[in-house]
Amino acid sequence: MTAVTIALLHPGDMGSAIGACAVRRGHRVLCALQGRSEATHRRAAAAGLQDAGSLESALEQASVVLSVCPPHGALHLARRVAGCGFRGLFVDANAIAPATARMAARIIEDAGGAFVDGGIVGAPPQPGKPGRIYLSGARAAEVMQLFEGSDLNAVDMAGAVGKASAFKACFASWTKGTWALLASIYAAAQAEGVDDALRAQWSQSHPDLLKQLDAPSLNPAKAWRWISEMEEIALTYKSTGLPEGFFLTAAQLYRRLEQYKDDSTQPSIAKVAAQLRKPL
Image (cartoon, helix red, strand yellow):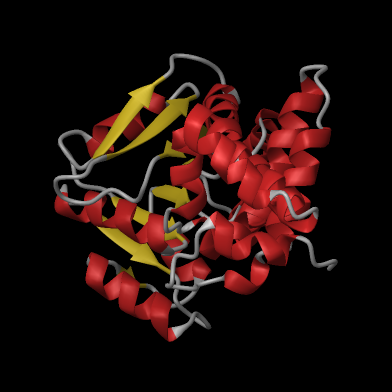
């Protein structure tokens, strides 16, 4: 394996964990921490990432860019990287629709760079608890080699840009979409005063749903970034001729939970249901 220099944009919980996987593989991983929070600085340092200061400085030194940001920032970040004249390999690992991924690819390729589409599933990877990233695009195999033998299992889907994003959208439709659906059902039951009856019935017919209602959850703390992910999933469905309304509604539900950003208490569905009924 030949070590490379990677510009990781940006080191949030997922990004820093993936960056740490690359560092443990012997790669040099840079990030641009100019203007970033103290928490981001701490995450980057703990992951072994090096601060290049500015985006421009990181791009000057890197041959690979790994974009891991909230979905609503994916195109903006691609435009910034392209505007800096980056001509290396750009890996977009964001939860975006296939159409958005293809748009990002055009931005990068028109500037002289190469593009690989990525879709991350599961929790941030760590030793003993590997994560997984699905890849598509002509140079997906190169990205696989970067993480070979690490705690990030890379899968080449052997398809064009958009395939990995489509897979991610379908996967997240279930994991995040059904959580929003269950939360909205319980909120409506509370509003009509039938929540106790619903719980009693579910205890007999669907006990797993009852467990999910009361289980501590990290989802509310992540709701702020899942708003745009639901919108990207809606675009995925619309592009295939399917109705997109359910996921636009899911985006509205997650928007009502924005106040839980970075909340470490892991509130259950039962505890946040009342918040879902409050208008924005």
